[in-house]
Image (cartoon, rainbow, N blue to C red; front, side, top):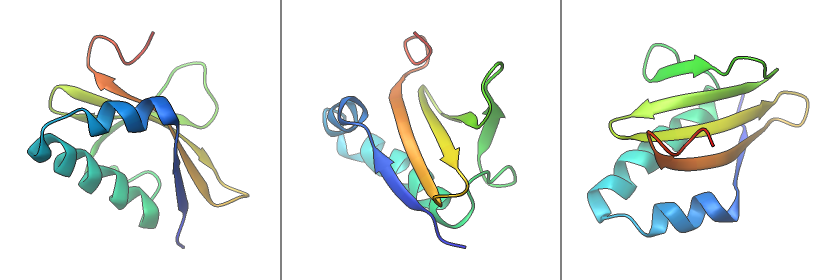
Length: 88
């Protein structure tokens, strides 16, 4: 089951501002979501409290906040940011 991935503009701007090796690490994590929207075995993922289908990926000092839209087979990346700023 393959999912489509959409990244909000603000998250895309943040990713593009990073150094190449950081961009590659985040890209790898995001691409894993295409085949497995909740890859608990391969990534550090947690469901966000109070949210129905929102999760966060912890990748070093970065956090990726995303939502799984099961019926549309869509992953929406809401936010990519540093650890302290990702949940504002």
